[in-house]
Image (cartoon, rainbow, N blue to C red; front, side):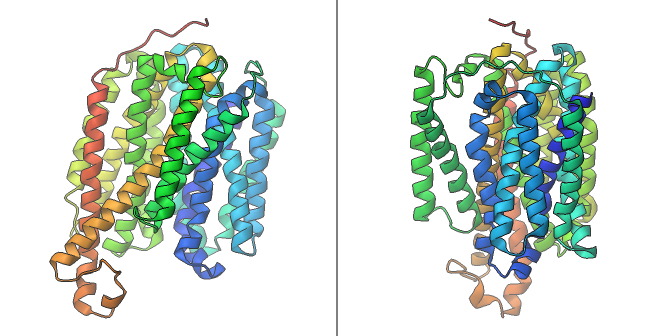
Length: 477
């Protein structure tokens, strides 16, 4: 338990700071005197570091002890929070975000791997459920706490709170954490690491920039995606040819692991895109404040966090099938209902729909993940956790980019139907009262289109779930 508490405190703050900062971006633009394209680098750089470091985490888990990796990850996160709390300008804050991302990239795979090692298969569902509580609860309360801090104090306090909790977690871990992983120190192939960094980094960067402001036709976006995809192909080809690969892709030989990866990829796309689209709709479609938007989405996040341990215990008892399949039916049904969203939609409707969506996601995430990892032999644990963690980061970048693009296209289509050609931007119409009157509904139309896309993704995951079955836990080779 002390081991789990140490890891989860660090993981909580890592996920908290990731979403808490999003709601402060508007205030940061004013205070640091930068534009939207520049301020988005606080998010892009964070995702980019995760995309580069998480894929090699499987190698790091085999080279360094649990204590070494934990202390390194918490030290980076703590230092990053301290620098961010003191940051006088954008450049220093960006450097702090890079430190925080390094800490999170080291910690998340360590969390999964440690639970696989220290808990027997019969109790892993409950343990993963507890971790789900942390991973889902932190992003849920992040925007609400950030909104309160910004309104009453300043954005610096987001990082001061993180710094205090991380420091406690670091000291707690130094005292109680034990080494639980097996050190094998496989040969390091630097070409594979380079290809992995360019591949995953290029794809995350390309999708992030496309979703922010650059657009899909940007030369930077196209070049990033092409170079990233080519590098990723070469990386995968090289891993399959090597005796001791950096990331052992032979884990995909285990069908339930492969199925879990596909479902988690799709569900993470749905989850992170909805976490981006809904707050935007509440603020720009319904005219809510940042704090009000955070409060409206808080019940769903809390419900999801509280249900994760329960779903973990149900998984231990009944297996994944009776949770994952109904969960994806719930997700698809709720997303379909949310695709009918308009400016007349009530706050109660949003709260209920978001809460039901979070219930469905809690039924899918941890049961599918635990079942997939259970099929792997212990020597594949570092690679399995690295693969899942990496692809979840990539899914987040792809999901949010596609959601923003579809939202934007739907909004422009609606405005064009009303006689406003905004293909060259909205600036010429901002003084037109009729245009401003149509703006909230145009945004609601774009959000509706984004949810229709999410429904198709949920149905794809549902088709995969029909093949899921409880696995027999693999023994060491």
